[in-house]
Image (cartoon, rainbow, N blue to C red; front, side, top):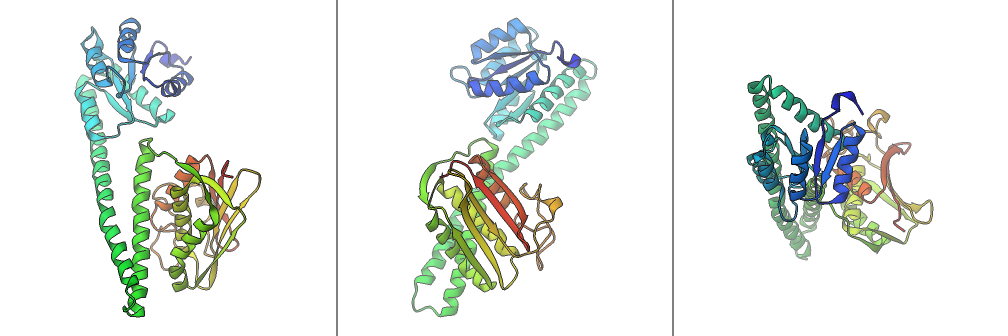
Length: 379
């Protein structure tokens, strides 16, 4: 046990055993003594008996919720001096406000990252000890931190509302373009423009859905719905949807599908392929090819790859290109810093592939870049 944490017992309160185990393991690895409770009444008993230095408290629990537990803890002798860190899946400004009103010292959202968890606990303990000496300064630092956290949550809520509200007008654009395409009396040029509008609206809709899914993943709410599906028709539908864009840019789409059926979340899988193809098409030069390959290296793992003939991704940037808003060098004619064009498409792909237990990476296509994915237990 590390000497700087001896005696700093942490009380972990969560009604879900897996959540408690994750937090306990992170704290114990760092040398903190830990006691755990699975309900509000049990937490209050531990609090009075153990006199913890800090409390990590879930909000949504049956019977007595975390807000009520916090209020009762603070009413106990010495309770107001113990920092309470709310650990919750409720990443929302209303939950944050309630937590602060209940006397919360900090607010940490699930899924819990061990490094961030330890940082918050150490900060809580440090500010607790500093409060006795410099109460005014400690309170100022805490208020500034809370204001920043609340601002972040307000911005996230506004972004979520905006993204949600964008879906309806985009759907209207798609419908209008489709109606024009169905008008056989419309001139060929008008039909062609309508097809481009429809394709661009589909791309915008994919981006909107990607933002929503990334937000769900941050809140631990991205759930897979796997089912068996024919792979060939998915690849064909996706390539046909961008065929006009590819033809306009004089890029040939070449497919090689050696796998018949896969077990995946069909909607998310399809959108991964759409994003990878969109990324490839943005960087494929005229009179080049984009190759889509699906094969297996064993009885259960699907290998899906998309290769373009562009400038490729520099080796030193490959480790970070799947992070949000991190982009590699631009293709010719594009703005600086736009290898992926949007900064979210590849991050979304990484999210979905890893949610399936798989891997994603980028290598050389000689020339160009090849984005590869591995989907275990998909066959």
